[in-house]
Image 1 (cartoon, rainbow, N blue to C red):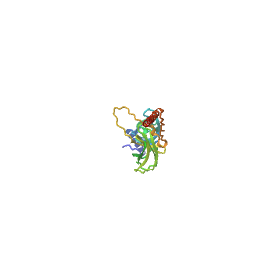
Image 2 (image 1 turned 30 degrees about the vertical axis):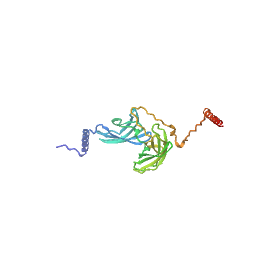
Image 3 (image 1 turned 180 degrees about the horizontal axis):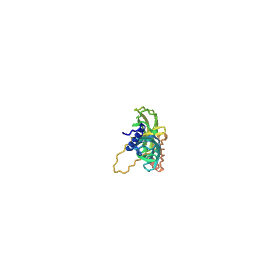
Image 4 (image 1 turned 120 degrees about the vertical axis):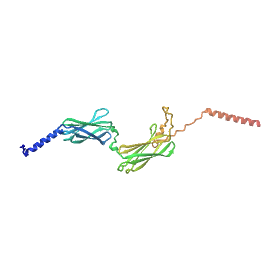
Length: 319
């Protein structure tokens, strides 16, 4: 007769059987947590700092997580190798073959490149590590300079030439590539001599807002010395910040191509012509007084006296 177990003993046998299966499957082994991915995004960008949002993905491949996982994020300066910033946050309980992620914010200077290293710990024990490098943070545009405006073209037209000065009409084409209408903004247009970079003239005007996918033409007139070549710079201002730049060239005196063996070519520039017309007084050279030397007047007197003597002698002979 086979032995029979009371019904109350069955749960104990089932629990023991499940424990044996779990042990055989390795679920009761120590956890193996690894970093499976790192995602980096710029949360905020100012003139001097960048706040990065770094998300670290975690995976427990086998075993039971024995406690709360913590992620330590360090940013190493690529140039110096020094730690520029460091933060640590909890990632939660990963459980049996569980996964999770943690998002961390780290503030770095807006310059240079950095190596971001995420290390996961569990009960003070290092489990896994991952890293990612971000390059040239200075290329990120500050939030205050974010704009959908672009300078699509610049045209120049000589409208007037007076004396040695020329008036240049500058037509600047602005296009709004953003999804929203742009706010009104100001532009500053400067004409600089191409070689010496002397400022010949500049004007600052306001431009009304531009609808999305629309283009507006703003016209500025500059007065510059004639027969020079210029670089015309366009600066777009938003409050007290330059948010966009553009430039074009006006060549009122096109140069000639020189031989490739020529090492250095100089160009004579009349600096006085670059004094702004509105703030300068055109000085006219005073006439130089001319004085005649007595030595040049004496021969004329002698000729006159000699002529009178000849006339008197001829009259005396006729008598």
